Image (cartoon, rainbow, N blue to C red; front, side):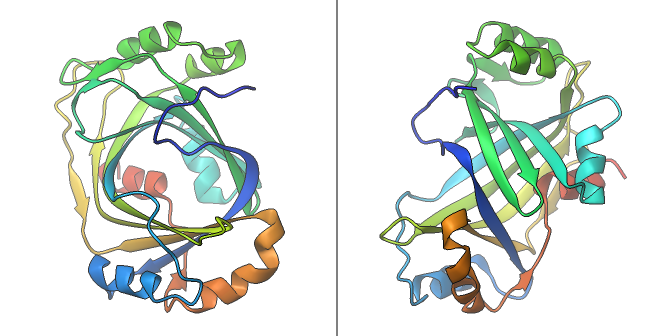
Length: 236
């Protein structure tokens, strides 16, 4: 399936590895110092920014339970945009992240503009999808899902100069339960200022060097999922 392109969004049509590392003891500024002092000499290709994600799931929360169970094949479906959390979304992207074991890829599709405010509901999302140039199979799949979780966090970007390894540092997460049927006041707000999540990302051909790259970070490996964490914070 061909993906729509939009400035500032990562296209990921081939599979790659994503190692997630978690620290609760260090603050974001300290983690940034560790990344910049890595012997692979990471630089910052983009300025830090706020990332907003609106996650979708089926009525029986199929994506959530597959991720909790660690199913061999699992996915996450979300809208993503940058900048202000609420208001007009001029350039939202529909992202479908598919994982097969330890490797994953991301399909991205430009979505028509919409407004996220107290009147937002699944009908508005579906109308935006109908106005978008989506493959038929993707549009039909969306009709089986509705919004369940809103999430935002701060992200900084780092990469080796040859582009083979990338590191992102995420912090200051906030989650809201969102209702797909009726108007939204974005209640059940939950904040996580404790965790700093480091993701080491690389292609399949770099697997042999990945252990060495990861060994310089004094963090523990985690299966941390923002979607799973958010659902468990605002629903349970």
